[in-house]
Structures are given as C-alpha cells and as structure tokens.
Image 1 (cartoon, rainbow, N blue to C red):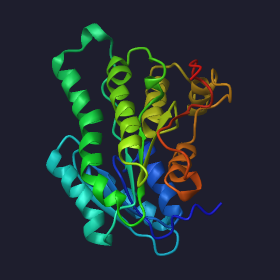
Image 2 (image 1 turned 90 degrees about the vertical axis):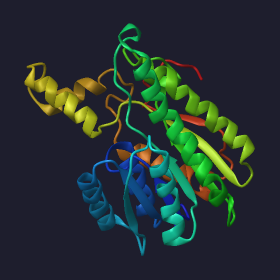
Image 3 (image 1 turned 60 degrees about the vertical axis):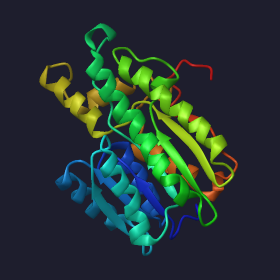
Image 4 (image 1 turned 135 degrees about the vertical axis):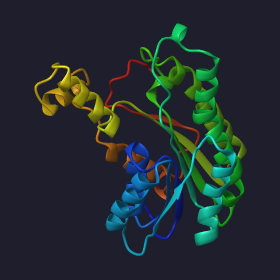
Length: 265
C-alpha cells in the first residue's frame, strides 16, 4: 500500500534506536524526509547512516542531537525541518522510559524528572510544531507512549502515572487542532528493542536462560501471539497514522501489544 508520504517532512524524537527509530525507518521507506533525534551524537549519526541506506526515492535523513528536557533543544529540533525543507508535515514524539521501581522508593525528584521527560517534552514539541503542522493542507501528530496508560504495570509507577498526561494532551489536541492537524497515540507493549535485548542478555549472565532465543521465547510466552513485537510493526502503524490513508482516525489511542493486555478498552 502506497501511504502517499513521498516528499513529506517528519520529525521523530528519540529516534536513534528503539521504537522511535522504527518509526523513522517506516517513514523514510515511504519516501518521507525525516529529521531524527537523540542525545548521543555517535549513536545518532550511525542511525542516520543506516536510515539513509533504506530511504525511498530522494528522501533525506537529517540528524539533530538534543536533550528532550531542554526547551532550547526542542526549539532547534522543530526549526530544523522548516529551515531545511521549508515545511513540517508530521510530528512523532517518543522518549525513553523513566526508571522502574515501586512507589515508596521514588522521591520528588524522580517524579519531576519523569514529568519533564515524558510530558513537558511533548507539550513543548506540540506547541512549537502546531503552526507549521497546520500549514499547507495540514499534518499529523503521533505520540508514542506505553500500554501502561491502559493497564498499570508492576514496578513502573512513574510510567503508569505520568504517561497518562500525554494521552489527555493528545485527546485535547485532536479537538483543538482539528481539522488541520490530526493527533493520535500508540501504546506499545513489549517489542524486541535494544532494551529488551539487554535485559535478556543480563538474564543469560545470571544463568536464567541458556540462550538469547530461549529468553526471547520466554518473554513472549504469555502473549496470545506467542511472541513479542517486532519494532517495525509499531513503526508501520505510526507511518499509517501519519498518512492520508488514516484520514478519519483522530484522537485515538491504539494499543500495540499482541493482545497481551487485560483492559477491555
């Protein structure tokens, strides 16, 4: 299916690896020019080089290092696609998860840090991008959050609590920015990202698994699909939500977890 994104311009944050990277990859494969972002410049440049090899047509990949907790860095991020391409059609927000741990082991600083990273980064990005997204026929926002906003996950009190603010913002933006800008969110469950790979390797070192394949199978054993997700499955969904093919989908929060969640809604 041609998603009709050729020549469009997208900004994808926290996209040097993980689900942000998969989203950028899906967009660039569809011919979109993509601005990617990450804090580590070496990792970011490696990701950009990799994405350029997969770019369809004349699509370009621009790497912009920056910290999502910095208002100045966010301003630079949003200005880059406009300065480089003269437009911004799609914003995909992603950020690393906050530290795990139970409620009684978190302090005020943990809460403020999580809020700044997960919520204020999205607030600042959407505020800065709203006007350019609305120009030239309108655009899209896709917020990558977590299925923890639907169903609390053990030892993830910060993610369970703070990420819900992003969903409230996304729903509000779907009303206030329409009809020029559509806003949706994706709520991923477990996907085979570098974080999951690291956790499995650590478990192998502890003697819990004999091989990576055994660990990966164990992670997916309780899922109805008997596996965890491929990051590109989420990335392709993000590209679809950014495209005209999803033109009547607005204000929705789509769980992508293989059916592992227990929530009815």
